[in-house]
Image 1 (cartoon, helix red, strand yellow):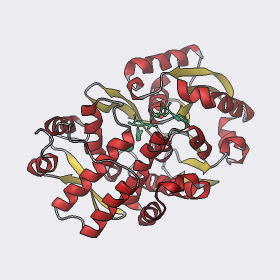
Image 2 (cartoon, rainbow, N blue to C red):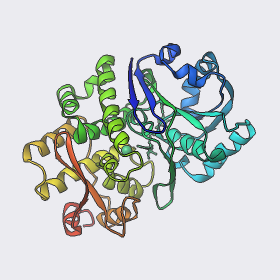
Image 3 (cartoon, rainbow, N blue to C red):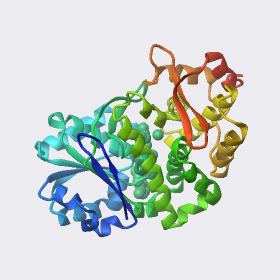
Image 4 (cartoon, rainbow, N blue to C red):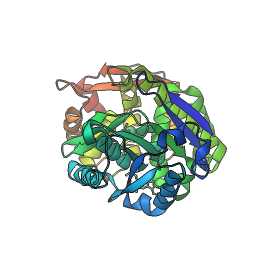
Length: 363
Ligand SMILES: NC(=O)c1ccc[n+]([C@@H]2O[C@H](COP(=O)([O-])OP(=O)(O)OC[C@H]3O[C@@H](n4cnc5c(N)ncnc54)[C@H](O)[C@@H]3O)[C@@H](O)[C@H]2O)c1
Ligand SMILES: [Zn+2]
């Protein structure tokens, strides 16, 4: 087991990473103490809860929690909206939770974002812990405190910063995770490697997707990806600047998700398209050397990621990018790779250059 601390000034917290952690909950130092005696509500989606809910409930009781109930919703991105959140608020009121109670988010990024936002808003903010069950949630969404829901005009437009008390990453959840979801999550691992960990990039390059079957390597890779995120978050908790680095691949990625319709591509598939696009822009602007650019493209290919399909309209993608919350005053700010393990945020890219890269899509 590895423990990574997010050294935030106000509320530092631990991320526990290992295989079978939930079989040995007391090993996670400090966790049982934080949970003991707490009244909790488990928030999950129907798919995850059917697979793992009972076990997690048992573990919570073992460490002294009083589990008051469960709030479930239909799995998938279309559930990440305010009307479904209202159902969670109802369950919190009925449980009943109070200011000292705690929410346990059990699931992928959708559950984490929804449960976190429910915790952020209930009685102006109560504690929650994250038990991520997808790779994407493990290496990205469960860490860093961004919570929220989608709006019909764009992803994640409604939300709040609310840090979890702890994150429990049990790699055993991989056993039931569909392959498409595993690959979706690896796009965020690739992103982390490109923006901040050359050694991680090298491991991904050397091992290829086969490493998923190797528990020890998986623990190394997940820990390194989490560390990249933890470091950036610790330096810029509220995205005043540097945290924007984590949006590498997301400017186009979010636009693709919006244009194609939520759920047509997994988040990671869309992010991978955004990574190809970021490399292309960086190359066109002369910011990245050719060797690094082609290493990134080859890695994406080796891991089976596809570029944005021709049938997506370039004009619609540009319109969606302008709606993205990272755009300010109509100008979209880009994160572009400068090499392996190095990226720059806050870059302006001329619309003509973006048009040129998306060219052909409308024809
Ligand atoms: N808050 C953040 O910082 C942040 C960062 C990145 C992404 N996100 C958000 O995360 C979401 C995507 O997360 P996701 O990819 O985890 O999607 P998800 O939560 O929809 O999970 C994907 C699917 O896998 C199923 N599933 C989850 N764990 C499983 C398991 N162990 N076994 C079998 N099935 C399982 C779920 O039921 C669901 O159908 C997006 O909404 C995105 O905006 C948030
Ligand atoms: Zn992401």
